[in-house]
Image (cartoon, rainbow, N blue to C red; front, top):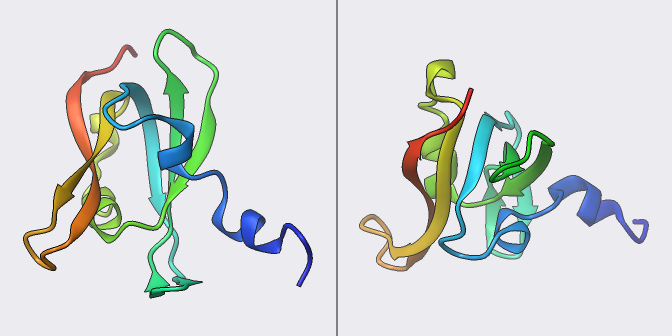
Length: 109
């Protein structure tokens, strides 16, 4: 395994690209068909195409959070762009913390 193999597999993480509750523009999402191996088991990898508020420049961030993957699997193209943020909540399903996307408002087209 090379020095950057895991970085390349996972990508730039959502939670390091933006601070909790920091608003950003979500332009598109994609959940990879194959799971990624983590220290906690297999996880769905979600790629989010995003922009900083006030910028048209896009970049990709990823999430291995199950709650984000489940939400993004329901995405409709008409929902983008949207201004969102990420927050940590207690999972109703697992009783532990989960990172989720929170809708703020529709984004500029």
